[in-house]
Each structure stands twice: as C-alpha cells, then as structure tokens.
Length: 360
Image (cartoon, rainbow, N blue to C red):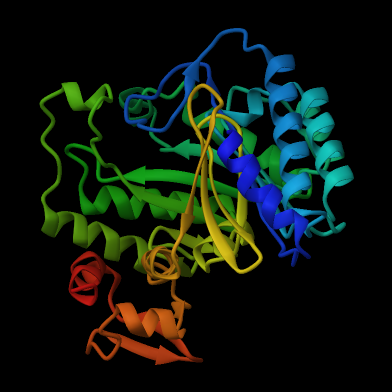
C-alpha cells in the first residue's frame, strides 16, 4: 500500500491532468453461492454493512486524493448481490461519491439485483438514492433449470420483479444463461421468445461454462457440443427482438460496460474489485484483494492496448484503430473490417481463434 501511496504522491506533486473515471463497486455478499458461480463472493446471513460502508468510503477518499475531482460517467454496483445492501448504506456511499467527484444528474447508476432479495419499497428507496438502471439476475424462466443453477427464486418471482422495476420507470436489464445439459436449440428459441414478451430494453445471454471449484464442476455433466452451442448462439441472435451489440449483450447498451470495453479509465472499489486508473498519461492496474489490500502495477501502453483489443473486438462497434492497436495486431486480416476508423470482427463465432491469430 505504501508503494502505491508514494508513487501517486509523486504524480500529485506535479500538475495533474484529471481524466474522467467510471466507478465499479463490488458488493461480495450473497444469500447462497449459485452452482455455476466462480466470482468472488461471500455467503453471509448478516454482513457487517457498517464495516463495508466504511471501507468503501475510505477507498473513495483515497482515490479522490490521487486522481482529483474527476468526472464520473457511470457508476455500477456489482456482485455478489448488491440488492442485499441496506438502502441507507447505499445512499451514504452515493452521497460520498457525489461529494468527492463530479457526478452529472444523468449519470448512469446501475445496481445488480436478484429476485427474492428486494421488494418494491426498497426498490423505490434505491431509486431515490440515485439508481436509474437495474440489472436483474434471472438466468432462466424455467423452475427446474433455476433449481439446477442454484437460484433462490422461481420464474414467477422473476417476472413479477421485472414488471415492478419497469413500472418504477427505470431502465431494466436481465441476465440469462443457456447451454445447460440436455438443453436443445428449440429450448433456447423458446427462452428468447419468452424474453421478448417481457419487454426488456436490454438483456445479457451467457453460455453456461463449468468453472473449476464450482458446484457444477463436481458433477459429471454432459454439456452441449460446440456445434450445438454455435447453433444456440445463432438462434439467440435470430430470435431475440433486441439487437446484439456485444458478444453476449443485446438491446440498449449498458453505458458502464460499453465505456470499460472501449478503454475508458475506471476505479474498482471493494474487496475483489479491479480497476484501470489513468493519471498523467500513465495507466495503472489496481485490484483490492479478498482482505482489502490494494495491489497495483503500472501498465505499459502495449499491455493496455492488448486489453482494449480483447474487449473492443467483442463489440459490434469494434476497437479504435490506434497506432498501438496497429502495432500489436495483424489488422489487415480478412476476418476484420474497418468502419469509422475502428477494427470490427466479422464473425463473433470465430472471435477466439481470430484473436489468437491477430496476436501472433
């Protein structure tokens, strides 16, 4: 920690160019661990929310002292299950951010939420504290699939919560998972048709991946083969009423994720959160580990360009064709096109192989 303090203090002694920084806040607490989840989270029946709040406020004070009063284009509370947070704690964190940084009235403020962890009254309290976008972890509209995934809600709970959020007048997104054992392409089309009926403005469609250390990894599951998964992926794009703008995302873009994918700086607050901080033309990789210790490392321009390439090519708008991107890629590949000075992948199904070849 002292190494980071010394490094930034030297920078702050010089005239600092303050760049806008998006903010990601990790809320690690969950009611239970989902069977597929490999994210950093803590199953905790009674989290110490006061301690959590004080940690986040301390981190906010630290960063405003290092980057100055930066503009904040977006704020995203992810998890874990942020909707478990007491609304009073959430409001105090938001007030601290507004005091430390420049937050515009129309700044996108997103909170992730799970059905069964929030009612309409608490939703209104989150909205009063600043939330204008909610990302709901639905994952499936089939009760048996929800049980398999280890979710605490059923399909009826999910539909009701989506409707409540829509009636509250905020932007509503929902996450879904496909590619489950024994699932067919027809099943995926049916899920997409059900999603269309919900009237969402945005949804994320993630392929189920079996990660080491998860409950599903301990089972001998027969997963769909690559050809079937490719057919499912194409079926999603053909059946959803929402337009794909990123490999797994459809509809009106989440501005926070779009900014991060496009290479904008962002602060990561809370245990397990990572950030990419930009001060005086120097990038820094930052991460709070599981015991709240801040780790940091300067990033060379080539390293940062590589990160932006990997995220930018996942989007339909592609990645800015900067000198650094040209230097690290074979950007004349036949599987790429250039549009508005951006490098765009022609086929997302071939993206992984394409990136490997680009970097050779």
